[in-house]
Image (cartoon, rainbow, N blue to C red; front, side, top):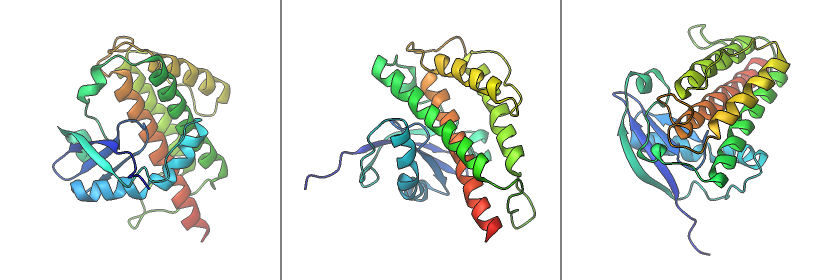
Length: 222
């Protein structure tokens, strides 16, 4: 059997946290205490990310995590240490092909769908952390949408995110943001974040909280 195709990965180094992100798979991004820990976490979440890729209409190789090839290492920032990937990669400044644009938008849409399903299936109250912390279901959904409003401004898409309870407005908002993310120019509409960078952040954030909701729902009902 031929060896699996290498999965290109970027590493973002903060002072106490490292993020490993698969360059071709917006949303497949995990963190760890160091490089090895981050890569292990990324590999461990391959099976969890696979249904998202399939929902986007893409083939996700069963052995995608077998060969993780680090192609770019970047210095992080306070954002990295706070717990979010924030670095702009060297390849983010390149225009997208039409195929990559469609693929990127599809993956972000699949990440949103995964979050919506997790919210719909979860109880209103989720298990709290060991110190009593952690948002409940509706607060998480609201937080994600509000954060996307900030991401859209970074992209230069403008506008404010709607209320999370107005599902029709949320659908319209996402459609508009998808159009901006699909911009094939290097810079996107007018902001400092290129479309690739913004898509990676949006998909990661949606999936990170979708998986959090799933995990804390299971533990709350146990």
